Length: 318
Image (cartoon, rainbow, N blue to C red; front, side, top):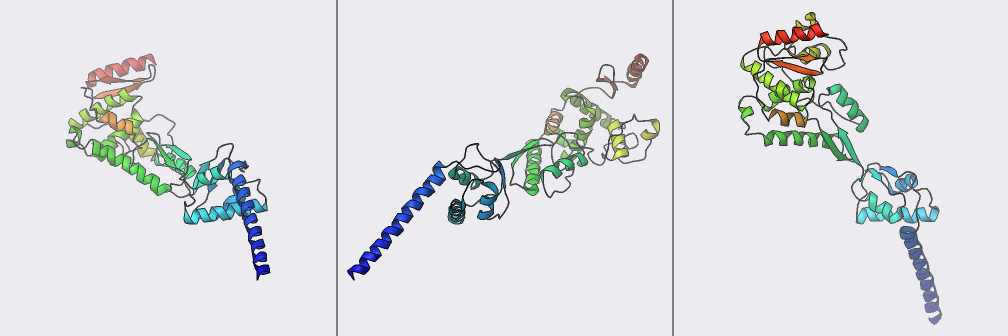
């Protein structure tokens, strides 16, 4: 009996020693040993296994070290913090503690996505194609052009909801504005899309907005070149030529030389900044304008006679 107890004690000591050695080695492995990540920008796929994560991202572990790391990561993920998926940025010097801590928190890789005011759906789709595996067309009325930030693990649906929220919050912000007694928010987005295509700078957009208001009040056709270009191209390409008289007579619902009032929808995405400019509700008496290519700005007039005179002077100087 004594002999059996001595043998048992011996084995317990051996097991304890092994446990202590494994613990000490694991501590060294996790806290002291610098690991070599295959890439400082790593990607964890959804539901990727611990084995795959270690094998595909850490270069300098031996078989035993990989076994310890995979086992720890699996247990840690199951009972403590789950492994997140997405893109992660690792520091240049990293140990396993830092590595595991990084991938068990939300992605620290932030995507910056800028939707440019005045863009067409086709231009936006090229951007979406680059950032998302799956996406859908976004209608001009649904969002506001701006710069957005999101985690790499957020998919298109979450991105779209974020865009919609910004648009809805902006609408809510101005819900009691006097302009909304005249126009719906959607109609202001239509006007905003015209400003994106016509305006040179913020002040120019404000003045053109006043012209559009004045012409609509007087039941005048808007006669905005950008709408005629959209009627021809549907926003799919640049026209790369000047409009001619035949173009202005196109019988199309977006051609404001042909229709009265606003076109049925926007012709581009509208910037959040442009909506803010619209709600400044700048006032003028202007009814006419044209672009002077010599001075690189729009020339405004209150009367048709004055408009014709300025236009004639410009053409004579060309």
